[in-house]
Length: 268
Image 1: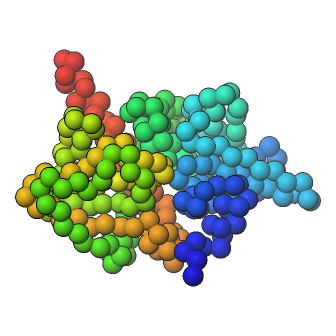
Image 2 (image 1 turned 30 degrees about the vertical axis):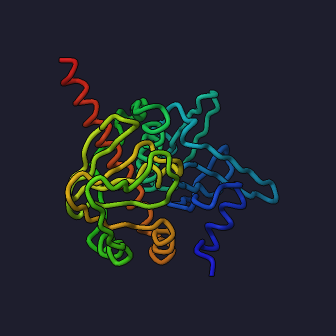
Image 3 (image 1 turned 180 degrees about the horizontal axis):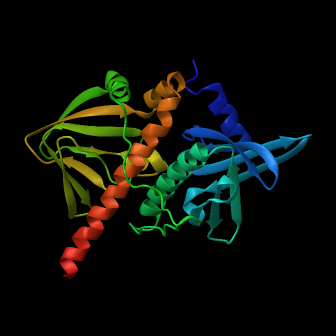
């Protein structure tokens, strides 16, 4: 039995994307007078239109974008790639424009955070002077309950490696008990305590772990969500996908701000 939804399989084939790329959210929108659909996945903005047999297909990987902004005119969202290529999408409603922009910016910032060595991307103001909100809308109580139903609990002991540096995996871990340390080479980068989670960078961006995670206390208990379960869950509850990925992306944004604050403290 396939673990990939039919619409995700068609999406991957149409845009020639890897199996980890599933549709987080899609919107009706217009690009260059072509009415079509905008698809958001973990690593890409994709647009497809078929107007009287004239097909238009565009792909904008988040990791090649230089900037983006919300344009009040025509309910637009504009993106600019590092190469200078531009794309603009016009949405049918203000609500779609706002939601799509917030999601795109969150995923883009997460991508830049990882790809450029923790450098925060430039956040442009919209044409009406607003920037995207920074509040994390978070998961609902029902969302969290559904995720917990599919989580498996695993215990690790002091010194035991949970994730090896460079390991490629599709899981998200939450610490239920104990403390973990984050290690790169021989350097300890920081610690994670009960209630915090990790693995979201590799899950969001499909790449090797940027650091190792090791059990630091006598016993560490983790709840582990496998990527395949999350994809199945989104097939059952598609409205949850956007909230989940935005939640992960916003966690990364908070980490960016925390690290910048730490650096400011060292400099001062």
